[in-house]
Amino acid sequence: MIKYNLDKIHSEIDKYASLVVVSKNRSDEEFMEAYNCGERNFGENKVQEIVRKAGIMPSDVHWHMIGHLQKNKVKYIAPFITLIHSVDNTELLKEIDKQAGKNQRAIQVLLQVYIASEESKYGLSAEEMFKILKQTNEFPNVKITGLMGMATLTSDLNRIRSEFKILKDLFLKAQSEPNIHNTEFSTLSMGMSGDYQIAIEEGSTLVRIGSLIFE
Ligand SMILES: *Cc1c(COP(=O)(O)O)cnc(C)c1O
Image (cartoon, rainbow, N blue to C red):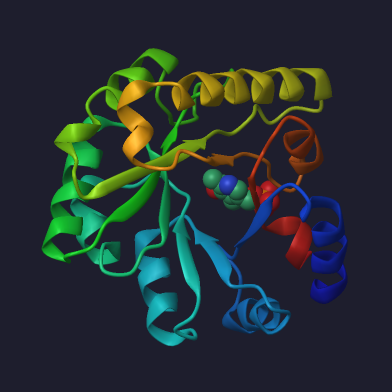
């Protein structure tokens, strides 16, 4: 079933976007089933779990941190993380820069922008996002390679589409910021199980899908 689901998703997205398999709350067996189908990009939302899995899973897995990240936990994922999708404040960016330096590597991150109309979602305002893009010189060990956003959890497809349109628009504006030209700003992480088709239509380059694969 996992293979069938993955094949279906790939047939829909591969021309436009890459897939992060969201393995949060999944067993190690389910994880390995997706791995054995050829998946290599996996996303988790808890530091403890991503560190645990990174310790036991094959070494060619690319790990994506997609959940809210606390400053004091950056050090645990800094040695191996491929992409942090959820940077939503400057202090966090500062800490990622510091830990990247300690590990003598550059860490790639996305700025998470708030596009939903729900109070509970994390993320930067557009204004805060642009402010950070003007300060990239202060974070030499961090590569800001794009934006991430989550649409409102709603059955109103027009609303989801318009939120993704807002994020795409911000992405294009951010790409023309002079300061970011030393790094490639090419990733737009949007779309989950319930809305990835709309996200693709609106320009997503990276979708994060969990339940649709494993259920
Ligand atoms: C859980 C999660 C996903 C995947 O959600 P599904 O609906 O299971 O596909 C994607 N992005 C983030 C940030 C998540 O926390």
